[in-house]
Image (tube, rainbow, N blue to C red; front, side, top):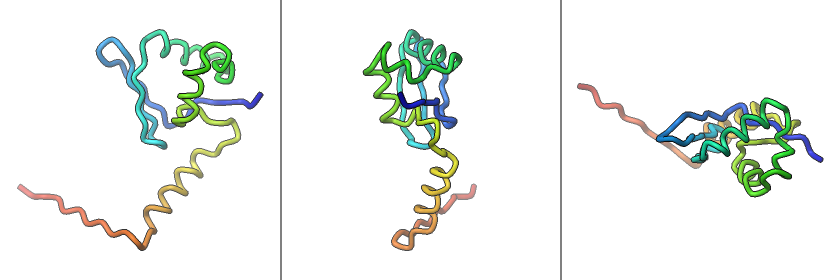
Length: 102
């Protein structure tokens, strides 16, 4: 069994009786029913993210595919630095942002 952990870049907030989640690293969103959110929180608090695979396989795979959960040995900070470097130093792209003044 591979050990999993919740991404450090997850943010969840209540939204119209449900919970909306965003992962800042993958830039993906999820809208969860309260039961699924509480299941995720219980797994996180008990250190049993990998056990979600037995309890709710479809939910487990969704979280994993969208980087809401990652392998224990995955270095999220380094992945963030690598993605920034790939975009920030890409000489094939140029972006110009003009901010209007009042």
